[in-house]
Image 1 (cartoon, rainbow, N blue to C red):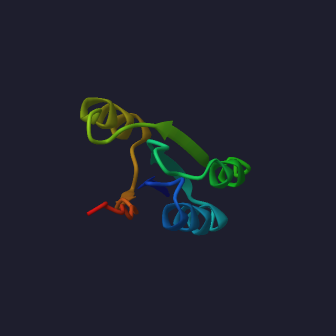
Image 2 (spheres, helix red, strand yellow; image 1 turned 90 degrees about the horizontal axis):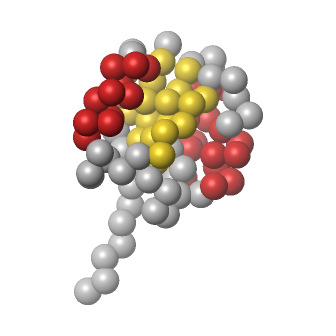
Image 3 (cartoon, rainbow, N blue to C red; image 1 turned 90 degrees about the vertical axis):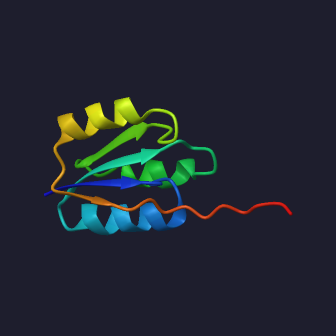
Length: 87
């Protein structure tokens, strides 16, 4: 099976991707790397079924549509982000 996980370089997204990859899924991870962890991507990239797209979902919707059409996922996982705002 194929899944898409956004926010894949973050803690929750990378942990979720790891679980899917460990079970033999193919994972397309998407992240803009604004706050993501490069180390998480290094670990995930050791899996044969891991694919990564550097993508800003807020401004590259057409590119996302092309990627999804090409990858043909069986499912997609919601974005895992936690943003702190200054008051």
